Amino acid sequence: MDAHSQHVDQSSNDAAARDAAGRSFTWIYAVILLLALAVLGVGIYRVAIGQDSWGLLSAGCIGLMAVAVTWPLALTLNTHRAVAARERAELMEKLVERVDQMSMLLNVMSDQQLLSDRAKQVAYRDKDREAIRRAITEEMGRNDYDAAAALADAMEVNFGRGEADRLRDDIRARRNEAVRKQVADVVAVIDRHTRNEQWNAAMREAERLMQVFPENETVRNLPVEIENRRQNHKRQLLASWNEAVQRHDIDGSIEILKSLDLYLTPAEAEGMQETARGVFKERLNNLCKQFATAVTDHKWQEAIRTGDVIVREYPNTRSAQEVREKMEALRQRANEPAGGAAAVA
Image 1 (tube, rainbow, N blue to C red):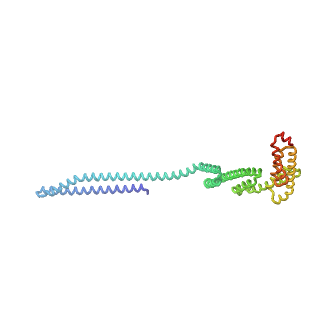
Image 2 (spheres, helix red, strand yellow):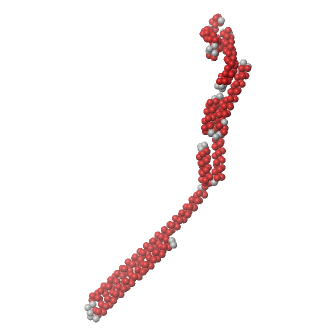
Image 3 (cartoon, helix red, strand yellow):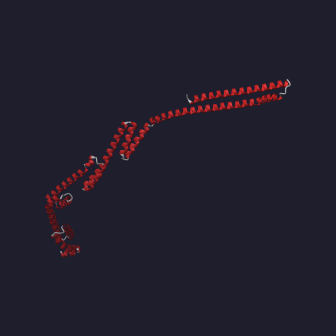
């Protein structure tokens, strides 16, 4: 039994109680009226037979008057109370009915809300999936592939594994492509350093890249690759050195030897020492011949330039000492007028 039915039964019980009270009230006044009539009748009778019963007659009259006056008032008050009670009952019944309606409405709203939540989940499912896709794309654009992978895991929880696996494949592909590009950029820098024979700079770039991508096989092989290139370049220099020595290319041999000096171990340098000494001796002889020829031909400026080379490159040799002794006279000859120089010559 619901609250409304209980209230209806209670209202019926209250109405029955009020009707019973009204009937009791009517019987009381009817009894009083009969008593007043009886007293009045007895009084009239006693007065009629000559007895002194005016007091009894007066009591009967007063009783009648009291009943005549108070009974309508009592009926009116009782009627008003009954009306008020009915109105209160009707009001309470309406209130209870309104509460019942509101309760039913709340139940309906609750059911609709549950349905609405489910409907929203269905309606916004595609939007939520698209939002996660956009978020993954943004994270990959910022090269934050770990965050993108975490979003792919969330996609698996909410929308199933198929979509999540596809997104993970995309993330791995983008990550691999980004790593490949970054490695390629650094390898290009390393290539430039190796072409310029900047081996230490190339190795530093390789070590820095290994700290970022320690698991990448290409990156792990970079130090070995750089050392291989260095050794290949060393072998090329040694081959060029031997060729230049064999064809008596003194200047070329010396230039190659200067480059080789950065690559040779102490043992290798010692093994080449005799050959290098012969090359430098032959160069000194050639410079001395050029110097003597320039002096003989009165080419003072050329003689000075050649003498400066001898003194600079072979400062501790006897030839350099002899050239120093002649340099002052050569500079004086070079500063003399052409005619005077010719006369002296």
